Structure formats: C-alpha cells, structure tokens
Length: 256
Image (cartoon, rainbow, N blue to C red; front, top):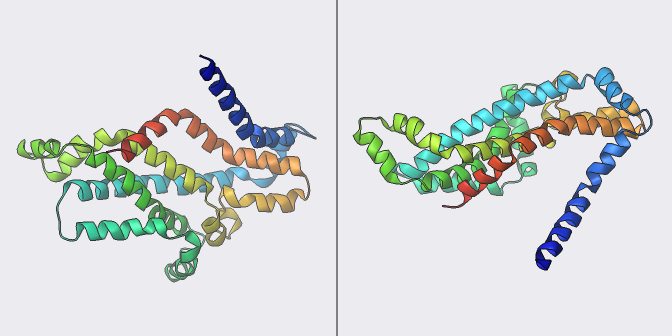
C-alpha cells in the first residue's frame, strides 16, 4: 500500500514536470492582451489557410500510407513470392535513412517533376518516409493472424483480394488506427521538407508559419505563443480522443 502511494507521488511529479512547458506556453499566450492575442493571430495572419494546407497534406498521407502499408504487409506476411525477404529488407532500410541525407535527391526530383509548391510535393515524400515503420507494425499484426483464416476463405471461394479486404483487414483495425495516428502526428509536425518545398505563402503548412509570425509580431511573444497553441491544438485533440486505441494498436502491431 505504501509503495503504491510512493509510485503515485512519483508519477504525479513526473507528470507535473512534463506539463511545465505546456503550462508556460498557455500562460504566456494569455499575458498582455489575453484572448485578443488569439484573435489577432487568426484575423491578421490567415492561419486557417495554413491549417487547411496541413490538413490536406496530412489526410492524404494517412490514407496513402494505410492503403499501401496494409496491402504490402499482407503480401509479405501471407503470400509467398520470389525475393520476398530481400524486398522487405530493402523497404525496411528506409528506417535507417535520415531525412537530411536525401534532401538533395529529393530536391532534384521535385524540380524535375515540377512538384514545388504543390500538395503532391509533400504527400509523396511523407508517404515514402512513413511506409517502412507502418509496414513493420502491420506485418506484425498480420503475422499474429493464423494462416488458416486465409486458407478457409480461399476454400470457400473467395479470391485472395476478397479474403484480404473482407476477412483479414478488419482484424487489424487496432493497428490501423495506431498507424493512422502516428502518421498524422508525424506529417502534421514535419518542418524541414515543408520549409523547403512550400515556399509560396499560400501553400505553407502550419509548422513553418511561426517564422513569419515572428516577422509580423516582432517581439510580441504572447501572440507567437498563441499561434503555437493554435497550430498544435488539432494534434492534441486527436491524440486525446484516440489515446487508448493508439496504445492498443501499438501493442497489437509490435507483439506477435
């Protein structure tokens, strides 16, 4: 009993320590003009346009990653084809490549294809960078499913695609939710590629606009902090709403 109270106190202290930056962020954003700081950010900087850009890029990335990773994970887990392990290893090699190492070839590809200041210019690299980790989690989920499910569906007359989409795919829903949330968080918060490939003001995403806010508001720190809170609010709300599903999906995808 005493140990439980000590553990509770320690957890409370760690939680408070973790929340100190967030508390500081909120208090500073409300200093000075109070809620007027938020109104100035929204009305003067057109932040809803930036939110829309981020939403379009992020949602499209999540959909693409879930679709491609689900199909690939099913194929690597349940189907047998030549070079399966080699191809899987090559895909997983993407986990070891930092973004900074591929900026030059990415820039050349963007210029060649005319993707600068376009939504596909961010959606395609975001999808490619998120796929290896999503594939690892989803393949773990499919490996945990017995092969007899696929065999039974095929014996009953279902095609491989139908067995995948109607039988196995619904069983991986917890992992799909986890992958979707993880992809959303990473795509929404990504900064470097968005800064390089979205130079046009009307195409900027929310992660790069604090720099322009600093120029607009000079040293008005409360307004800059208010902008940061508005930018992160969708991410916080999404994670808070789906936290349990995120945790279940992580466990389901990581443990065979």
